[in-house]
Image (tube, rainbow, N blue to C red; front, side, top):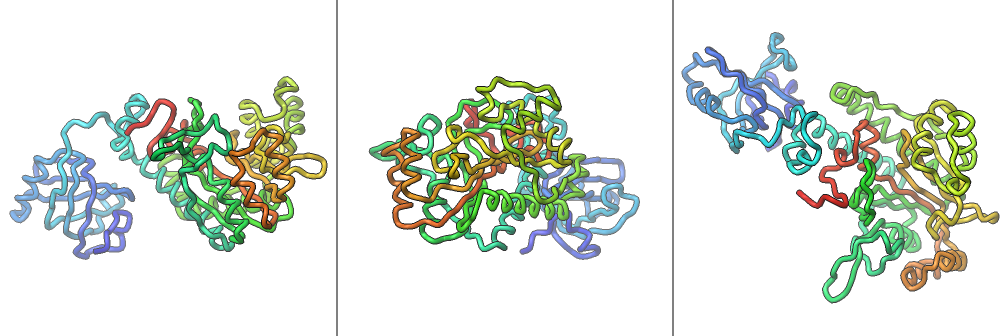
Length: 439
């Protein structure tokens, strides 16, 4: 049986149908009962006339039903301009209770402003009933759908790589060690090595949307120990600009289609407009950014700090991108090689062929043209002091590997910035951080 969502009711006027959801509110008046039923897509008013004998059992049932219980209702939806909620009402013939809620909720999820965030996270299954929270994950899912669609339209293959790895390959200090039968294993920080492996196998263009794990004891509004990463890698590129251009096109495609499908609902619930960026995204060298930040906003840092973006410099990039380019996004290039992974390519002058993408003052991507030449990547690994840990990875490049590059976007951080959510703890379905493993 096809489930009918409440947002679809206008397609079913005067037809016998069945709907279901949570009981959000009950008004039990002298001659009539009004029940507000909600599902993930919307709400509807159910109207029960007490004077009609056939409604006696339904009236008694509703009179004793706790809010937040779930019900199934058979009947007809009819137009009624007097009803403030969407100008319609549902006239029931039968109501079936599918579950009964406890009378006392842990907190009022409809107004969580005075509820401690940790309490909300402890009862996340209640907190998620809030309309903003429900919409957050519909928006996230829709944006990912369209970014996926862009890649499928451009001949990408979706892959699924292992999350157990045998060596702490990228950074031993930031991986979670787990017991794996009679030996140690580690949770993957990213699918980076496997993305490159399949390109060496001839896959050409691949992506993955999957969990990644970072053993970073960071208690900030933008970090998590487990997060969902949208990873992309593709072959036969000529420069890092090819990677940057594809990422910009993918993001623009995703935001454009998201605005078209859900922009009105996002405006209604969050009070914000989806801004679709123009192409191309602006680009600045790291050293030029520090010069501009000093000249425009008197922001100065020690020379030793200019080999990467400080948190404050990153934040000021939001203002810089707007003031200089009238844009929300900013690519930052020409980072020193010592600050980046050994598999990032360097040009003949030793300049790193990688970039960061800043959106609304926070880095959402590190991307690069990768080093695909065996001798060069072996040399880079030795410079970083990497040996046996990356031996299996270096093998990928011994037998031919095309020029390639890629990037990764943290979906939870992207959602946080898109909807102006204060913390990543609220843009993740279930947050994982140094001090949280439950629920």
